[in-house]
Amino acid sequence: MDFRSCLDSEQGFMESSQDYEGSSIVLFGAPMDYTVSYRPGSRMAAQAIRRVSRALEEHSLVLEKDLREVRFFDGGDLVLPLGNVEKSLEIIEQAWRTLLKEGKFPLMIGGDHLVTLPAVKAAAELYPDLAVLQLDAHADLRPHYLGEEKSHASVMYRIYSDTCVKDIYQLGIRSATSQELAFARQNTRFFPFEIIKPLETLKDELAKRPLYVTLDIDVVDPAYAPGTGTPEPGGCSSREIMEAAVKLSDFQLVGFDLVEVAPDYDRAQITSLLAAKVIREIILSHG
Image (cartoon, rainbow, N blue to C red; front, side, top):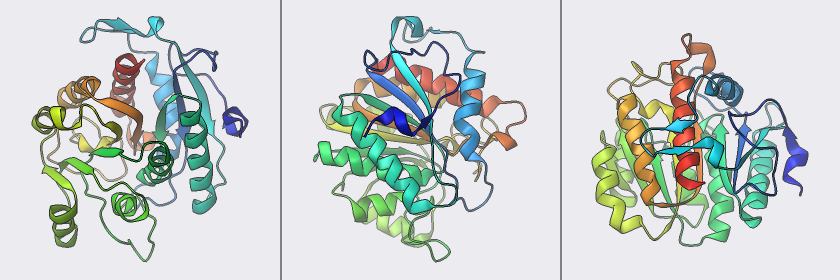
């Protein structure tokens, strides 16, 4: 599969290159939001984040690095069949498999959180000892939601049940059912409410393992990130999530996604701007 054959290219993230072969990082959108449980619209996130990225500086004061010094490719959005969950998941999985086999670092913008499932499946094929780190307001450990096994509310349960990945680290969680909490306490590494201290605690444990990171923007308090489908009060600040993004440079990331930005509820574009800045730090940290 030619990764570029299933993309809808448009104006890219700031300072992105047109050199696919020469780029170690490949950014792309997965515009699927068919399984959201409250407010839809995250299929438009990648386009919105690209547009606002140009309002940011290319240089990171924290990392003291510049996007103009890093070669990364923005391929646009995957072309997904609207409403067809299974086929969309297949396309996303194949895209990840292709990129990983070609030695690229995939950076995916969702879409609802279910897009993480096929990405982890593909990564686990190449990295059998893969660990997954989730930054999120919600546990996403429901076996099913409204009768559906594949939902953004069940993505972490599906990863645990349907892949070989059993080392799941859940940070920042502040919303879960009693059943999800019981499952987490027995089967995952569960760090509710906090993100910075757990990252510091886990540095030695995870530093030498291949790590997939999924960041649901609703881990951030809606005061700082209102443009999301299921906002949950009581989250971290924008400064904390930026600090977390920088701390991820201490880990061996093999893939990253940022999901659940919903531009229709982001009137001042502050959520998209925050997402773009997080993505900038991830590119600079791993480019």
